[in-house]
Image (cartoon, rainbow, N blue to C red; front, side, top):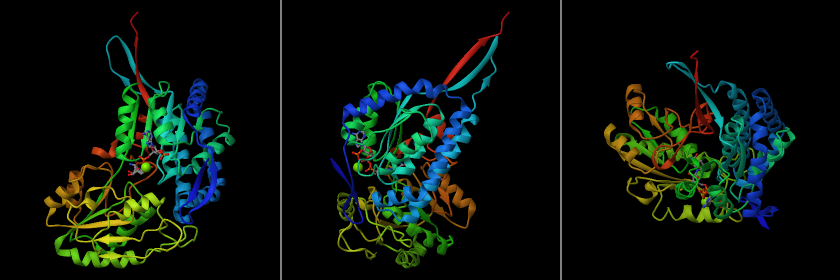
Length: 450
Ligand code: NAP
Ligand code: MG
């Protein structure tokens, strides 16, 4: 038995029997059996079932949000927004299925056209930081395309994924189409990755595990998409609206207690405004309410585990420019921490901290801003702040990152592609792009010769 822990109280909220390879194999078998039937469900019926699931998620929203908050420690207002996005994701893919077109291609002697065929059984492996959201980003397009799935959530935060599987059955999505298996990644995750009946693995998690998944998938030439770590730059030029840039910078890194792959954990600031910016950043960060995630006003809760807290603490050895407060006593708390000035060569600027620690790094000019932003193995997200639109766009085009915003610190939208460059992974989730990752292109030539 495994206890599922509330990170704000360290109390067990549920006891679970963990699955092993046998249960995983049974889930793959169920998905394999269900696949031909699900593939053949008409497009309008598939869309109707996904819409029904979205509706049940909306009806269950408060319960799902509470469950996510208790399991992950994230503020209840964040969990509510995340549930709303989960429902939107299913609505989006219900509406997208019949817009994922093939092509007709001019050829001689006949007609040539393409189909988008489902892959079959798809394995989904998700992390603990946004358990429900990230599961939906994979489930929506995978199911819409006509695949069946085996979802392996992170073993410490499995509760909302389990609930989603129950809601899918309630929506009358046939048994075997959406299977959830809760067990350790190194055992059931690995078995899923190597399984000969699984056509693809869609993974979100650390770059280190992503690397092992690529290797494990090689044996069966599985398709793989990887959403991995990040060390995103928030580039602030002297001519930016500093109130706006500093106003949104704290939540862009301390949101979800910094456990966000898109966290803008390196703030690059032009030297002429460096001190002013750091002062404003400190003032704005002071406004973040840290505490009980179930309280309506909380903006930052605890970290997910004691292990995560220890990892984060290891990045703060010297003196911080500013460190806030966090509750003492039970719970895996760590206060928001601002380190400044930091060199881009320091460990805290190179590695993904995945906690509420930000490194503020000075730069002199446009060229150096681009160089520093790109001086990282990652390329997931980021921002550029300047009132000079041409400069902002010029710099944005030169930053090697899959997702970037100008004069904004947002990253994710239901209808726009999300994914990484470099060691942040490959493949895109969300938007119409995600459908490409859950289908194969089949080209058909038909002779029209008499
Ligand atoms: P993780 O340690 O890589 O684990 C991710 C998932 O992989 C979990 O379900 C884990 O299972 C499973 N796993 C572990 N070892 C495995 C193996 N050998 N084979 C197959 N599966 C295995 O990541 P995490 O600690 O949960 O999450 C934090 C990381 O996720 C950060 O690096 C963050 O940047 C990244 N992330 C990326 C994105 C993105 O979209 N790019 C979004 C969110 C998070 P168990 O934990 O149950 O063992
Ligand atoms: Mg991990």
